[in-house]
Amino acid sequence: MSSLAGKVVIVTGATGAIGSVTSEMFAEEGSKVVLAARNTAAAEGIAARIRSKGGAAKAIEFNLAEETSIVAMIEKTVKEFGGLDVLVNNAAYLDSVNDGRDGDIESTDVEVWDRTYHANARGTMLSCKYALRMMPRHAGASIINVVSDQALSGSLVKLAYGSSKAAVIQMTRAIDTSHARQGIRCNSVAPGLTLTPITRAVVPAPIREYIEGETLTPDLGEPADVAHMIVFLASSAAKHITGQNIVIDGGMSAHNSGFAKMYELMAPRK
Image (cartoon, rainbow, N blue to C red; front, top):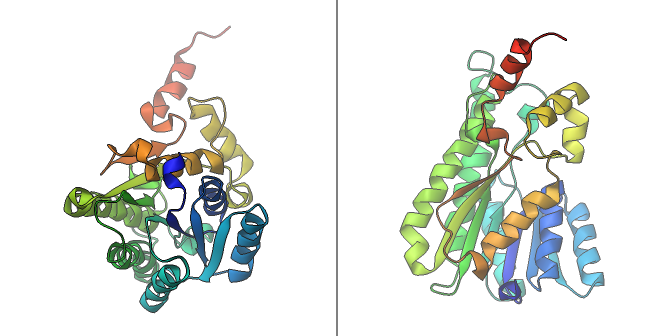
């Protein structure tokens, strides 16, 4: 993927498990990486690690819920590295998911809904809006939006989060429709349950084991599995892939998981 050498890449939410691995993978490909995050100290730690290996990286403070922060992040990137070629919208508002306030339609109050949409849908839209103004036309620029498998099917929980990520999938298609012929591709990736530190802390082991049992691959996904796809989509190797949502869930959504339990119940007793 030498096509990424010298490219200027922004990764938002860069201190998370997926964001940090993605940032380091881009740096390994020779890209100049901006690590955008609320926790600038943690972002600078990752940036320093990249620079220690000979890469180019800068940490920039970033708040997905604030338009002024988004604008400043884009402007600082261009000032530091002279342009912008790739935007990875990995940042997301997850507080209401993690503390259990984002439930079903009756239990989720409007404050949770508004806060989630304000960050995940509005913030991602503004990040794309201002990034597109700086991206070169007809030069292989790319936007990759990180969404979630929660956007693809109904659930008893995560009403606001899943709905906001579904909005980003539609946004991805709209951006691609308006900008692909200008040389700016836009795709999204939808990870399933991924073994991040937050997942291990928040998702009880029995639930993780159940999901692993319904996953068609031998193991649950790791952050690197998602990062590899993001880097690939940004490269010239993916030049004909655009306007797509790529599901990275180990085949979980490829089958009706309910049938596995049904056949188990139907199996003759030994």
